[in-house]
Length: 64
Figure 1: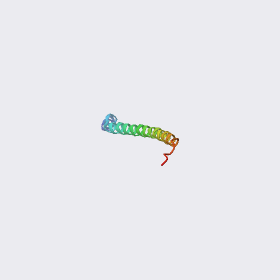
Figure 2 (figure 1 turned 90 degrees about the vertical axis):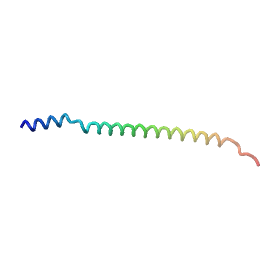
Figure 3 (figure 1 turned 180 degrees about the horizontal axis):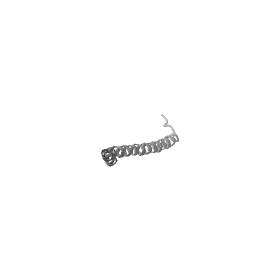
Figure 4 (figure 1 turned 90 degrees about the horizontal axis):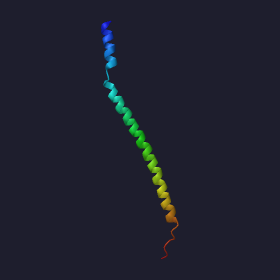
């Protein structure tokens, strides 16, 4: 019985997998933030290019 209690205590104190879980959560958070940032940046870049296209459409064609 004492051996079982000792094993249970050792199992509860074991934090070997804790670092791996923390790194996995951190990597997931970084991936999520990166995806959101790139999506937002892509939307803004698209709007800039559309504005440029609109302004260039107002320029009259050069006569030859």
